[in-house]
Image (cartoon, rainbow over all chains, first blue to last red; front, side):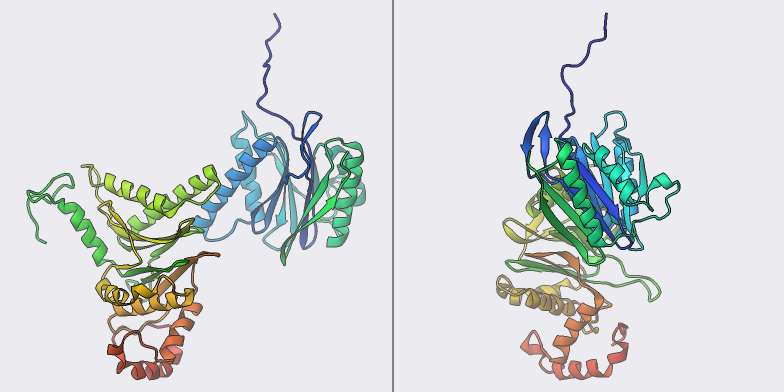
Length: 223
Length: 271
């Protein structure tokens, strides 16, 4: 007698790709805006990026209902932190909070593949990359989601010095300038869009630096 | 009021139908240092007197941000006030989480009032010894409420609680009809004037008071000391006076402000 399997899953994968790159004094966080289910497109204009604090921006691919629930929990927790400490959470503090929040649901996880980007307390760019249950690491760049297998090797090649493949990474962040990093991100997504059916429509780029936060958009292939 | 045989428990009625413990709790509010609130159509200003027990210690925190659109100033047992502020913050966060929209002020004060009422009907509890002036903004406009230890709450155009609040109330009663259409800056100025009334001749400086504002397009925030001192200087140097009765005092205040320039941040206790 073979084991009975569920004919219903609480999860769905809405696809999409997210990327973040940390620089000396900036951080770039980008994602496509396509939301899919199966082989269908639900919408071409859905943001996977949210600003959690002054200097912390999170981008998540995976099951967007879980992503939204996770964002709400973090927003509420940030409010509590602000009331207790009279200041905004730093990016490393938010990184730890995200990890703890994810592990809290270790036995019914948030189906969310996150990348947290921002500026650390010294104003340097930082990127934290996560798995679905909260394992995280500070890195110089990262990609998650359906197009990550196409983008990560390309970033390893282009951003040689912060690449962990040098073991250890020679630099903590990329030596690229802000505009060079943005162009790199655009190239990543254009390439991923060609081969990954779940990535496309539009690219949303969030840039965080000392002067504040700014958003850029770019059209991608819609097929 | 005097001690009597019906005032030991909060759950004992007096023959005249009074709950003395609740009334004693309201006395505690009257003993606290003054807190004032006023509102216009678009803004609410909360102000309070900050008296520290000694020059060596820091001031008691009496104004709390509850959410971007709500703030509260307290008079009485400040520890009780802190605990209630934490409750209010939690309620706002939970409401925002569920409805993705800010908690209407009227709902919050009802929840607060119901919480206070519970303590008037349990033999193992005592009433909260703090009065709260809740100021906030929601879809129906700007609101100012006063929450009592008794569990009652009232909406006000302007109100003052705590010690020597009657002086402030007299000033507010005279001017409240102008508040609805008042500009934000005039509202803050009126708050400072009302606050000065409670100081009964003592010098008004930014070190003895705290002012907070919330309004349309302006999240609740406490004004920093420099800004407040600047506003105080503005109307003192101009010699502006809130009422004709004080006209003779105006030139004295103007010159004393100039003479005491360097020591402005020290509150002289024996004027």
